[in-house]
Image 1 (cartoon, rainbow over the protein chains, first blue to last red):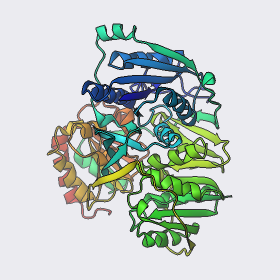
Image 2: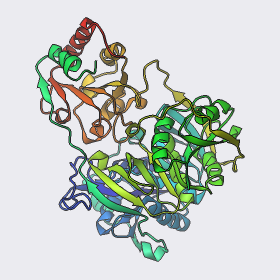
Image 3: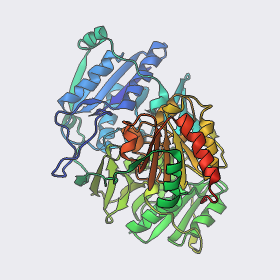
Length: 249
Length: 317
């Protein structure tokens, strides 16, 4: 079995994001970038399945500018066998990402495609579902547990009401929740070894995918600021304030 | 052109967020129709027809919709979209799972999680965990939009009498099978719509200590929330998680206990009307969004809080 895992380079989750003064986006210069957190879970799960003997190969793919390669190198350092970088500059909407991934799926013929359930930059939560749609494959979104069976996966999904379990036939798309596993850290020797693993480079335009944005970003602005609050000295003062000032209890 | 809202329900009742989504949908265009896909779901179609904002209900009743899978929903939705300019639903786990599958097959770039309708094609949506708001204009002919339910008031549920039209399902999807759903039943208000929410974080230390939170939730008729750290540590189940990848809540009163206030948690609660933080670390970022901060050991503060609440004559429900 072969597993394709899609990873995205985003602003690190610990960075306090700032909006550009001219309203065209957020500041990315000199800002720490990392792999989108649930994409790390997707890689970890694929590597674990390979280690259990149920998969033969794990291929990591990223779509983005030259620096996006860092996320593939990181995936290679924690156990992916080889990488693919599809080069495209600027914002690529999930619809275009899913079309690029479809081209790669047709070329690579993976049995499973994993990715994070949502990227923490645009917060879209679309790509996996869209890829499943255009491939006409089943989708198992927001996965917190995956059991690999002979020709199917049993996936536990995190939903608003609790947990849901579904069984999807292979080939399938899985989007991963942060609770799926605990991603490992790359050791220094493995980081060195990852540099020698194959990383294929392609251009989105060579794949025949139109990546032109369908959604115009008119402006980006700061969220409304909350006015500064106060510290209270005691529980009784807190309760008095909630009752008499805020009038919420 | 008209707007088609995909109803979320349990085959008996509409789920509460469908009413919030109806409000947003009718702001896009007043000719709002609702598509109800269910199994033995006549009561749902009737409930949708009674929303005064709704002009027409399309009802498809078939056993393939028993468990609301995105695959079976999508083929039927695609059969019914011809006369609509917008397909919309709530941006909760139901809509997040479903809408991109529909959008991709319409070759539409979806607009996710909108918090305001500026015009028929322009919307406001949070990005970067709500640290920025983007105004975006969709240039697709048919637009697929998911709605952050807590940003819109629920539509009235009574007084309407829209026509209900029966229709037929699309193809059944064979490669996916529902196995089971483990819903956590509770007599408390739903987290997403509660007037008061009290949440615990890593500072609670274990699941047993959540009984301190439960006691106050009982007193205030509050829903119980949690930070991701508390859920990951197994103190409480995932359906309680508030934050960027959990639920977004906008209660009148949000009480954060033993929660440091990571960006990802703030994304789920900082629009609350009044925020209280109880934390022994005076430097915790949660205090930067709190209207009332109490720097204290929660194991002393929570029992005192309950005692003070018991002293009050009346508590708003």
